[in-house]
Image 1 (cartoon, helix red, strand yellow):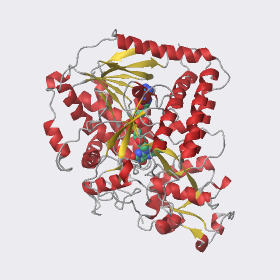
Image 2 (tube, rainbow, N blue to C red; image 1 turned 60 degrees about the horizontal axis):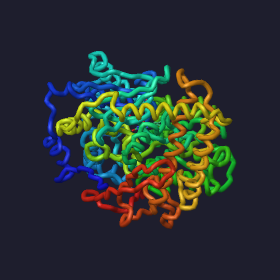
Image 3 (cartoon, rainbow, N blue to C red; image 1 turned 90 degrees about the vertical axis):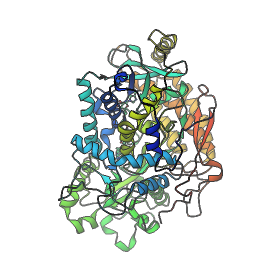
Image 4 (cartoon, helix red, strand yellow; image 1 turned 120 degrees about the vertical axis):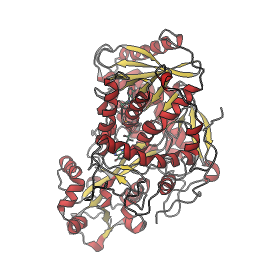
Length: 637
Ligand SMILES: Cc1cc2nc3c(=O)[nH]c(=O)nc-3n(C[C@H](O)[C@H](O)[C@H](O)COP(=O)(O)OP(=O)(O)OC[C@H]3O[C@@H](n4cnc5c(N)ncnc54)[C@H](O)[C@@H]3O)c2cc1C
């Protein structure tokens, strides 16, 4: 099947305007005839649901949380990018576009990235109008800080709670539409399947997490904004509930999954402290504005940091990447930390840590300024580690954080299944092989507030939609399949908990398909994962029943999907015989350990078609062309 990305013609600066002008419209009175399902109420889903309802569509929004406001977006700390150039420091739409294409290591679609940079400025206006309390300067202008991979300050923030404040804004807009009766909000409902009728996405199957009732919901289009799948690694900075089920089930119904192996490992997380830990904690990238990263020059140096003189410290990011220093992009900073630890110069238990030191900044700016900027993050660090980062350097280590892969979408954010739109972290669209910090919130809100409202109208206006009902054979059989899967899981009555399988899968993925991968390890993973999956389907134990609140069952269903999806990630990592961004294949590196791309053979997005559990998926390639940002070796030196 040929993939059509539907990128409009013309210069990149004019594509979006031209496309908007050419998209067919649905007249205001007709909009109320269309029903849209939005799954997910994070920044992408809440902004989409609110905006579509504001336009007049009837929206049903679904979340597995008890409140739309609990979506994982609430955890975002550091900020949101926008090319406002308030600082007059040289920023522009073009520069944000350029930084994002380069940051993604030339594996993103130029046209999408340009549109993202273009609408970034409107996002800030929209959020300010909603009352989002962004930090401000004395004169009233919104304040900015810097994030990795940029030499300008373009990151807007609300202390270390940017995601929470943005989500309150979007939730407010959503609630207004709930009050007006244009959005029907379904809390505590987990999507189990996508319903495809006549080749189009026409509904979903959900399980009520309180009563266990499984049912179908039909609509004219389905929008998935269900977030990322970093928890396939078990340990990650994601909220514990984040999972791949919604996008993976859509994949099993025909939606292609693109670049599943592109995982972002964030350099500044609190190191793991034990084998039974269930979660990792992010220390925001914003800390790298003032914190300096270092390790002792000498291997195995166990002196406390204050006993190690300046001359015996290696500020390795400043040394290796003098132009970007501590604000080098995440993939590069993570690999550099791993390299220092692999070299025996790591600090803390097991030598798996590097210092993030604020002593210079505190001396220069005073403790109060640092507390104003990062107070809540420092407090969080102290509560978890028992160490006071105002006095001792933080210890940090890379951890799984974000997934650039996701369902394949065209320029309209529609998957290859007509009528299935995918937004936010759930799609693959804008970040290529490495996302720059503070660009996920920007993308989620761009998709929800400013892209889908136009493109979904174009889809409806093209016509061809027949009426469908919950009684259609497709809806009935999807419900039945979901019920059978639940019954099969409950009937097993084995000996191991879903968590024990998840933990084991996570370790395989981290060891073989994590921060560094190689052919042999990936092949081992492809052998081991099906064995573990088989054991799961013989030996998992899910206590309780399917007709009550049953968190083991919820987990079991999600782990079952991770056990299939993990294989897809390994296939993807194995076929890409190059290193790019977060995908670091040990066989493909430069002499000084940097990622070595192979543009002649791998300058494409890999979109995978499902062929059955355990069957090799089919690879479809969307060739990428770079007409505006010259394909070049990425350098931050
Ligand atoms: C600790 C942390 C800090 C971060 N900080 C930043 C930052 O400072 N800046 C930045 O740009 N990015 C940051 N990110 C990344 C960013 O937060 C996420 O990429 C972004 O919030 C994802 O938004 P989303 O709307 O796509 O998905 P989410 O916010 O993950 O929302 C997913 C929604 O889908 C629902 N859902 C999922 N599956 C189902 C299902 N099967 N059935 C029903 N509902 C379902 C969930 O209930 C939820 O409502 C951070 C990430 C982490 C982990």
